[in-house]
Length: 483
Image (cartoon, rainbow, N blue to C red):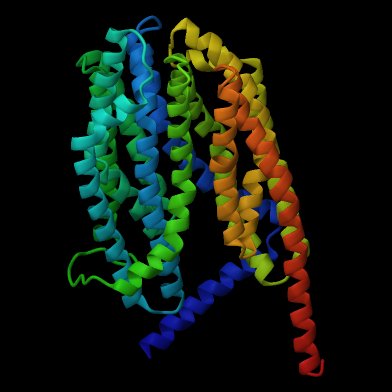
């Protein structure tokens, strides 16, 4: 009897959600579903951004170069750490939401506990990596220059990277917990957790820098403390509030089938998020191989800190739009599907045009927030103006990736992510880099223009094919039923 009641509640909840996706005007639906994701992703982007702002302010314009370069060199490892958490979290989210929909709470709980266990394993691995490989990694990427400055870059980079890597388990577990809450429809706890972490980080950075004089080590400590608090808050909310799933270790048993299910959805998510780090590392190595010096490496690091703020609204919009696109594809409502596509392209293009305007009109003002040396300001301004050419094509590329996922063409989405980052950016960076550090930045607009030109038309072709197939199936069903 109880199970029947639970099933009725699940069906009622699904019906309400279906009514919302089916009947709410697309524009209103897209805005309301995207704003929480945009806000959460923007807050998350503030972590590394504010670290760099405070470090630049502490060292001052003339002396900030080594510290800024050190943070730039450590950044790809932070991207990979986040990708691990996202991969596990997305995989668990997909399994848990499906199991809860089927009324199988026991399997949902096993999956939730397994995801936390995987996060702990990841944390242990990162402790080993942080203690043994931090200095070697920074040294391998650091461009050679004056001996004293090169040593400062390696020392600062090692200090920062070893701390954030050794204690990265808090970050991974917080990301995983956020996805677990989202699997049950709880968007509030992850948002509060991210706000709490970002607020503490912003408060502690100046304290450890200016009051305690801990330099780069101080911002690393501030970062891990903020991640620790956010992690503890998320885990505590599972204990003190009633949730649809449990992460308590009580009764935990390793479940190979659940691991396979998590991996099925999680590995593509990990690859999609980690590929940016691979591209970043390759660009750093290319700059070093072509003896471009330390300035381009600093510029690349600062660009990615600002890039995250420009692209976050677009990525948040993609999160909000995916359920809308998926539902209307599933229901065969091509009109509402294409209306959502139209608004997606309008909004993403508008976001990117704002980014283009800022990067073209005021690149030095944007860079000045980090208090970099004058040479970084000068070369960075040129780099930003060249990279900004890629922003509007990127709007179409990112939207296409999301669109492929919505019509069950996940392979196309994964291929496009890999092609954009690895298949085009890296080869063209190697080619253009031969002509100097100014030309290497042209790899970005080249990649986005080529990818959008290929995959966006392909997406629209697949949309037509998929909806035609659905219509044909519906007609066959109608004929079979004598309608």
